[in-house]
Image (cartoon, helix red, strand yellow):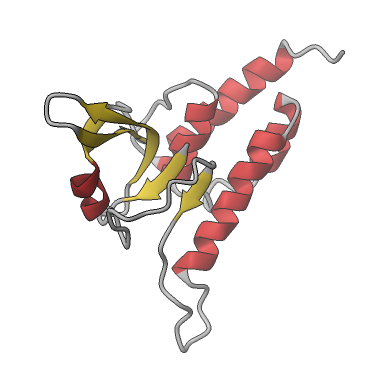
Length: 157
């Protein structure tokens, strides 16, 4: 599955492509990565038009990739958006690769203010939970509570 960014900055996950038989059009089936995690289908051309920096001629590799367009580093040497996205992608990979809930907790501890809401929602999605609260702080604590509860019942084999 691919995760791509819309022009408005929100992320969506492409679930699959489908053919709408009545009009013989390729449709993209995708899911929003924020509550309520709605699933939609849209014509391929319209879908890629609403994505940032993409067009209808995107490669159909079928591999799992994260696609984010970012700005280049500015003259002040401030970390650019693309480097920030790579750091968060690395965090997601590390979180997914962690074999135990204890390790997942270690990865997230102390990063409360550094994890964007979009990434937090994605991490919760991987655990099949919906985060409670309206602020980043409450969502972070909600995610950590889920991890701590699951860690208590984790059995090492």
